[in-house]
Image (cartoon, rainbow, N blue to C red; front, side):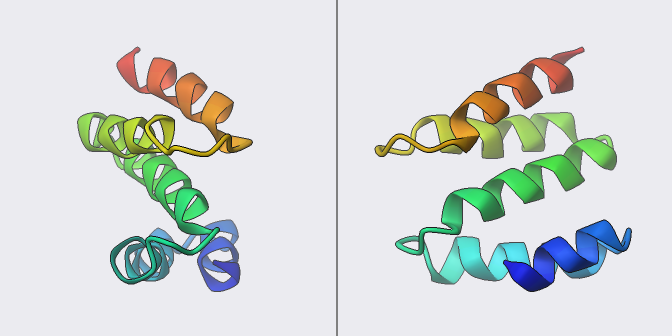
Amino acid sequence: MVAARWYYRRREPKSALIYCDQVIEEYPENPEWVEALYLKGLILIDRGQNEEAIAHFTRILAYPDDHHLKHDAERQIKRARQ
């Protein structure tokens, strides 16, 4: 996720998505899986793909463990619905 965050900060979302998708698809047990979903959701909102972003944030809310990004995911769902 270091690379994904780096690309996102450099305003290269296409490259960031490659790393997010890799974590989401190949490493669902990885602790950074939730962060990958969250960052992908942010990128999708930036692209105007709000419904798809909401789907990713909803997956975070369904995550069984308590995670610090759950509150932020709720906030981003509200943002995407505006």
